[in-house]
Amino acid sequence: MLSLSTLLMAGLAASGATATPVEVARRATPTVYLAGDSTMAKTGGKLMGWGEYLPKYVTVPVVNKAMSGRSARSYTNEGRFTEIEKLVQRDDIVIIEFGHNDGGSPNSASDNGRSDCPGTANEVCKSGKTGETVYTFNHYVEAAARSYIAKGAKVIVSSQTPNNLWETGTFQPAPSRFVGYAALAGKNVGSGGSFLDHFQAVAAMFKKLGKDKTNALYPSDHTHTSPAGADLVAQAFVQAVSRDYNGTTPLKGFLKSPVPSVF
Image (cartoon, rainbow, N blue to C red; front, side):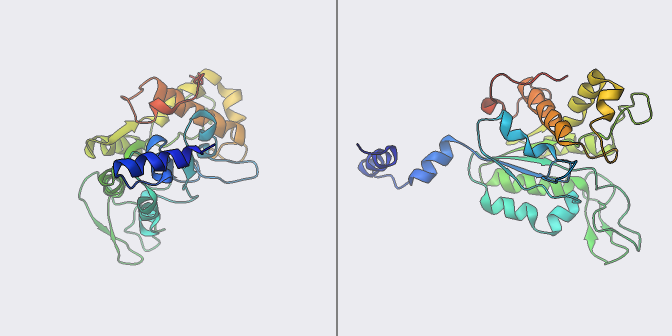
């Protein structure tokens, strides 16, 4: 009996097409690429990033390219956005989520190489340590997003996850400025881009969980969750996608059923 790949190739040859079986499969099933920091990345021990749990809830492959300690600036300078650009194909989906390491000022002599220039447009700064030109969060994120869209991929700009919102004993859901920056970036890249407010989705989940259950998800500090917490953060992301939380995203058609309900 002929294999499916052989039958596909025979049909393509008869029609004069030259696509390979791999290309056929790729068009039918996009790959999701993740770009972010430690809250998304594979870490280990008592901690884990939510990107490691996303495959449980979607029907398409997920490639987690998030790296601990990175900001939009350092991820750019290390060539990590470019690495994804070389891999991405038409109809693939890239989720970009930064913010935890993007604060501070690059102007200081002790510039950590992660702080973005303040602002949301074409503002530029000079690193007080290296003299390099430093751009805004939006510049880095939007440039990466447009490079993927130019290749026919789709982009979800996701706002950063919140820190422990029950840390002080009372619920304090005030977002950082990078949540608004991410929303603006998702809008600015135009067709092919979208925004998902992961911060608000997780905040709603934490409010529902309450103080004690939320605190238990942060075994080391107020930023990084346990594996159980990371799984819940992934579920909040998927639920937000399913509800068109900030408008429809390209991931909606690839959710497994039943969709989690955590907020």
